[in-house]
Amino acid sequence: MSDTRPVPLMVRVRASGQRRVAAHGVWIGAIVMLAVLPYVFSSRLSLTTLCLMGIMVIFALSYNMLLGQTGLLSFGHAVFFGMGGFFAVHAMNAVEAWGVPLPLVVIPIAGGAAGLLFGLVFGAIITRRSGTAFAMITLGVAELVSSGALILRTFFGGEAGISTDRTALVHPFGISFGPQFQLYYLVAGWCLLSVGGMYALTRTPFGRMCNAVRDNPERVLFIGYDTQRVRFIAFSLSGLFAGIAGALVAIDFELMSSSQLGVEQSGTVILATFIGGVGEFAGPIIGAVLVTYLQVTLRDLTDAWQLYFGLLFIFMVMFAPDGIAGALARQRPVLQAGQLHRVAPYYVAASLPALVAVVGLSMVIEMADQLTVHAADGPRMMFCYVPVSADAPLAWAVAGLLLAGGTWVFLRAAQRAKDAYDEALSTAHPRRVLP
Image (tube, rainbow, N blue to C red; front, side, top):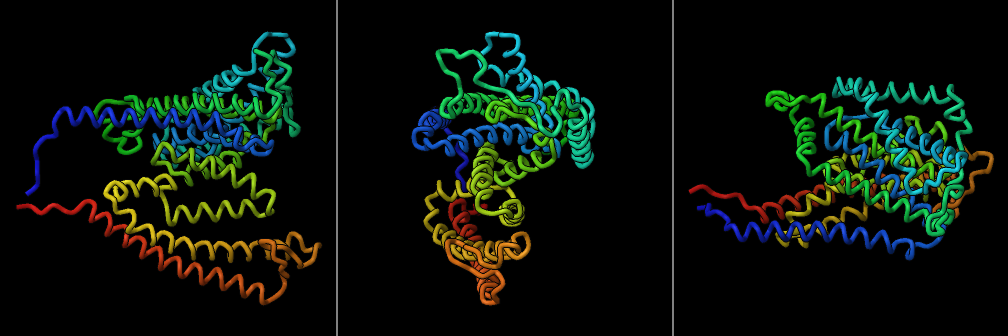
């Protein structure tokens, strides 16, 4: 017979206080981490990568306001990212030309204002529809703006884009933001403010209403709320934060081109959000950090880096549809019940053949790339610091064996890991038997 006695008030208050302390601890830890990171990773490449990660975190979270919070799939979110960047570049050039004593730290406000403005303009039309119609309209708007950028050369600069100089503005306290070390703290500060603002929105009644529109729009209409208005506000606010991210990338590169408005940029943020997970607030943060790191590293390692991203996306959709954050969140009840030690060995056993399969697949891709794209360089290549001949039957046989064998073992090990997880979960939450 189950115990149905109510939880005492003091116990509930104590639990609520512990949750608030934990939440404050997360934010304090984030501030400390952001302050210490440039001292741990002090090279110029590392600082540049950290800046790109911070920008992508804002961009991915702004996109998740549409997809994860409101259930709106957009293929044109880069429009607000790019427009925010272009307005920021023109604002910087105007401040320099007119001699206005405006510091660089406030320039992202111009980008956010531009993103909000275009979010209001396009949102008034796009948010009249939802679902597939909404997604197709955003794709059309993205193509319209991207092609228009090549025509309006005065504002967008054509294929060359618009350049600027971030050190030409006033230097408060002698800080020019020329060194990458100083720029990092500018990006980190705006990243922290933006993430905090978007998180705060999720805790408001409006954020809860966005979730309701995502889950059951018919019921929202039934209780008297205008779903189109909710979508419109969410769309506009997501444009605001995307514009801030665009302004930061313009400040970082001191250049803005029409490619930042294209579908490729929108695809990157979709990829980061899905891989990280749309169901958890931390999901897009994880996805943005991972995708940015892979972009920086894979570009230097292989010409087929975009193919790897596509395969990663397919793998996540098939085996972890709720993303990395969702997969981690599913371990919370097992961890709280002290049952994680029962499933961890199965996770390790599944990860090892997965790694073998990845090596085999990478070998196939790189050898095919060597025989096609780099055919003029001959069949000799280096794979994982090992000399390989791309036209040798033995190399293809080894790659095929690693790929097929690793995949077969992984699928079996993954099923055993799932069974172990289900058993641990049932132990943590046993079914109650009615008297």
